[in-house]
Image (cartoon, rainbow, N blue to C red; front, side, top):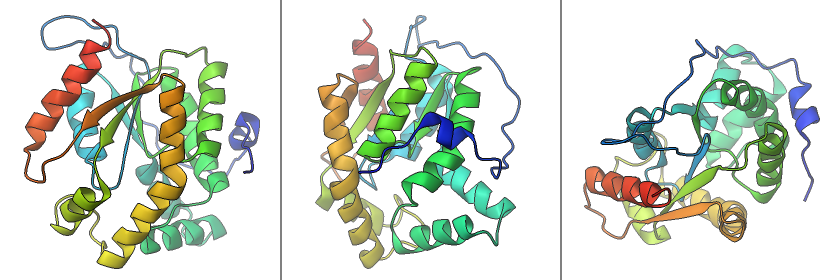
Length: 230
């Protein structure tokens, strides 16, 4: 597997995106101040609700969201005719992933910039072992070692049902693209999740009910996260 370097990913001058205003954020729980990780990753199969729960966790604890899909789409919008944009669009249309080089080159500058001034929840990066090695290098360079990832643990069968029900996936999801996304997850992302677990960087949130309200899953995610710091 080809390794990625921080310097390689930061040398690109082709990335254009609006990073917005910078602001120091305070992490505050519902009833008391909590010293939570500066970087809180979210992982899980497609259909596990990472984006939904990220949107709920971020304002509750004072995090800023950093979505890989959003960064890639913004890159395509600013550079519609580039080879990278065509490759990104093809991956999105077929349920695949953009290459490690493209993903890292687009996401790394935003990740490094934002983590200097805010507590962030990165979604969609890292997604495989090569990206995870780069991620760990980035955090080490920034002196960050207290990062954690909340993993939404859901079976492939249940995740597929949630997506095809129409409220947990993308507008262009079909049974074929969903099956490919699940295959990509199992082959590329699952080994990374195992590595995170071995490194002591993973907290698991179990999802076993197709119809469980998102509020209940969110409450369980907060309990898992806060229990790790009590």
